[in-house]
Length: 503
Image (cartoon, rainbow, N blue to C red; front, side, top):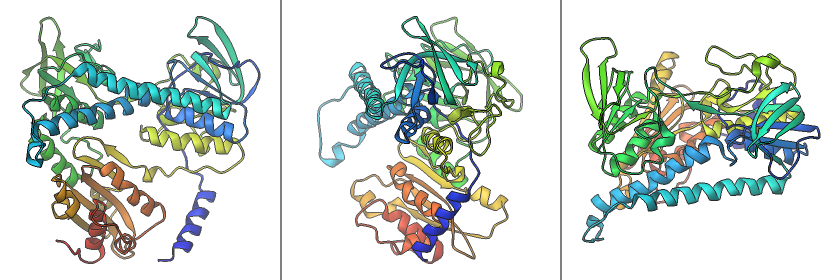
C-alpha cells in the first residue's frame, strides 16, 4: 500500500469534509488577569478540555480571545472531578492491590500493607492542582484573557458574568463558543448528597472505604470507580438496567471483560431497576425489581454511586433569550462548522450530539476555531477512541463486530491473546486479547478492540491506521519492537489477513 498516496487521499478528505458536531467541555466565567470589556474575536464559555483548548488555539491563530469559567479553576469536570482524579485513584488503588496480591510472587515481601486514604487523596489533589495551574500558565503564555465566574447571554455578542469575587462584568465577542460540558444525570427518587448517595464527584472524595458499595450503571465511569473502591476493600455490586455492561463495547470483548471484573469480586445485577433508596437508617436500603417488571428485592449499601450517564450542562446560559435551538435531550443543534442557528454563536463538546469524551471535545475545539479563523477543521467521530481505565483496560476504535454485521459487510476477524505475548508473560500480566476486524475483499481495517493492562496506550496505533485507511496487512508488515505488548496487535493483524506466528 502506497503511504504517500494514502496521505494525499486523507488530506483531500480532510480539506473537503463538511461533517462536524461535538460534545464535552466545561463551564463558565469570572475575572482573573484580564478585562473582558473590549470586544474579542472569540469568547469561550467554559474552561474544560474543549473550552480551554479552543481558547488557546484561537489565540495561537492570532484571534483576541477570552475564556470564561465558573469553577475558578480551569480543566472542567475532566481535570477537577473526572478523568484526572479518577486515574490518580485508579493507579494508587492498583498499586495497593498489586502489593497485596502480586508482589510476593515477584520476590517482594513485607509483613503488612495498609491503605492511608488521606495520603492517597492528597496525591490525587496534588496532581489536579498542578495541572490546573499549568493551564493558567498556558493561558498567560498564549495571551488568553481569563474571566472567572458564571455567565449568561445578554445578546449573541455579549455575555454577562457574575464573577466569583461578587462583581459583574460584560464580555463582548464577535464569535462566542459554548463549551459548558455536561453534568451527572439524575434518577427519579434519588437525591445525591455526595456523602452516602454520590455522583462520581463524591466517589472521588469519600473519607473512608465503604464496606458495601452499590454502583447504579455499568458504564465506563461506574466500572472505573467501582474498581477503585473494590481494590481498597469494598464489596462492589453493579446494578444495570440493560442486559449488558458497557453496551457500546464489542460483544465478545465485553464478555471477557465482565468475567475479568467478576474474578476481581465485582458483582453484577443486570436487567435490574432501582425503584427507590431508603436513607432513614445507618445503612442504605435499595428496592430493586427486574427491568421487565416482577418481584421486588432489597439490597443494602453503605454508599450508592449514581453513574447512569451525563446530560448537557446549559442551565442559566440564557440560550432561550437569544433563540439558540436545542434538541429534546437539551443538546445544542449545530451545523458542520459547529455554528448554532444564531449567527456568531457556536457550540462544542458535551453540549452537542456526539460522544461525551474529553479528547473528542478537544478536537471539536480546535476544528471550531479553525473554521472561525477561515481555515478548514475536521473531526472524524467514527474514529474517536474509547477507553475504560480499569485493570485490564479496554480500548476500542472503529466498528464493533455487531456493527459490521448490521451493515451487511463481508469481513474477517483476527485475534491474539496476551497469554501468547512474551512481554505480558514476562511481567506476569497477560490477561486480555486484541481483536481486529477488516473488510474481506480489501482488507481495510474496520475496527480494533483491545483488552490489556495498557490498552489505552496501545489503541493509538490502530487509530492512526484507521485514519489513513490502512489494511491489516499494513500493520502486520510493520516492524514492532520485541518484547512489547504492541506485538499482540501485529499478531492479531497477521491473524486477520493470514496467520499469526506465535499461536
